Amino acid sequence: MNDEPQRRPVFRRAALSVLSALFSAVLLGLVAMWFLLRPGGPLPDHWNPTKRLTIGAPVTVVTRLQMMRALDDVAECRSVLDQAGVVFDPMSDLEVDENCGIEGRGLLSTLPNSRMNRVETRCETALRLAMWEEHVVQPAAREVLGSEVAAITQIGSYNCRKMRTSRGTEGRWSSHAKANAIDITGVRLADGRQLSLLKDWDGDGPEAAFLRRIWRGSCDWFRLVLGPDYNQLHADHFHLENTGWGYCR
Ligand SMILES: [Zn+2]
Image (cartoon, rainbow, N blue to C red):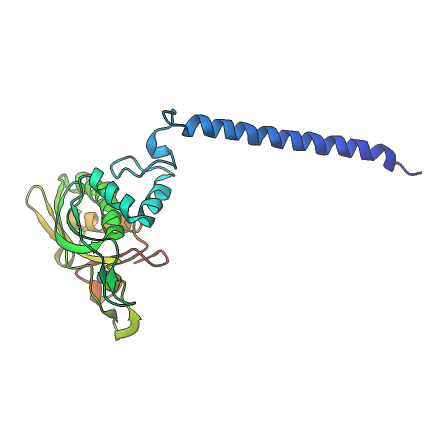
């Protein structure tokens, strides 16, 4: 015997009810999205992926998305920095050749809560640094050292040169050639203490614990980080880079 004729209507009814459930779910999702994301909606800006990044806001699952959008657009990047009180005086782009130059160029002299010796860099580097200072460096300083960081010391961002490795200079261009990296050597605390990677990286004290924590935390905000444990060339600085594949050592 053939029982197909009975099965077909059952199958059709099941398919229809799945479709209508899906349709209702999508509709409900759209209504919920409209309710949450509409201007004046109940969702705080730092949970709203359509809103501009605020550096000082708590970090949520949408922060990275907001940051990527600001990094893609120099005007938005500059205004996000402005809003956080970061001093990044605009300069015209530096155009050298295909390997060297600075897009979205400016002169960075303060971060959200600390000073920095002045450095010419690109907006992307300044913004990633600002996020690191706000969400990693200052909390670590308060918790581990009981003080704020008053200043961060750097030894350069833009440098039109090839990569340096322990084997010498390599053919590939350094990320510094487009100011896509910055080298950080230490911090000065509000209570006057000076910390440097060269003198404080090793050891069991709170200074070493602090430096290791801010090194590890920099990997959340930059895409490639090299520090004293990587090789002798980095014994005195963190190399924080915007480009790369998530390497952290
Ligand atoms: Zn470097």
